[in-house]
Length: 227
Ligand code: ADP
Ligand code: MG
Image (tube, rainbow, N blue to C red):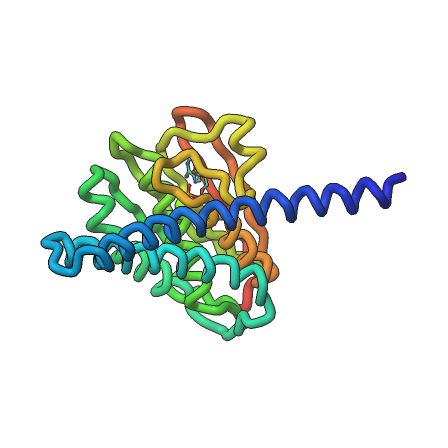
């Protein structure tokens, strides 16, 4: 029956997610164990410092995976307050500008107003902009442009983030936002899933337009809080 099918779908999704989490956490654990065992055997090792650094990096990695999942587990923790998002976006742009320049990427931020009030959790929203802009940079291995634009009207605020990168195929587009879907060597495929969840917690939505080898646009729509 239909009800049975839906339960099975859910179990399949949970199973896939659990397998993904287990895999993502077991890798750094295995590496930490290996390095710790080595240090235990050889206390005078010259590589001591290097191995301790690796262990600490791996601890950070596990921690960030767990933190990403906490966003899913505790959505109600999001504290919405009225804030101007222009400096929030500007802040993220400044944060990424150096990395962008190294990759011949130019970030352009065009806002239609200097004050755009949105009911939001500033830190969470910052994480969303960071994830989207970072993905844009990573989608342009040969450089390019990122255009961030705002569009405010009486009941909503649109923020679009457009890149001139590799784009997404139909298959990739269908998978986007699934946990652990990544096409990157060092990706974890959690950034978009977490971002979509945060936007949902802000009563907003996202749509994506993409063309292979032309680029991708993410359009975030949030409720407007202007008086
Ligand atoms: P990660 O960046 O760790 O791979 P994300 O959840 O941020 O994880 O993104 C998942 C995947 O979606 C990426 O690996 C990439 O294939 C695709 N993607 C996301 N943003 C873009 C973009 N701007 N252009 C092309 N592909 C993208
Ligand atoms: Mg990412």
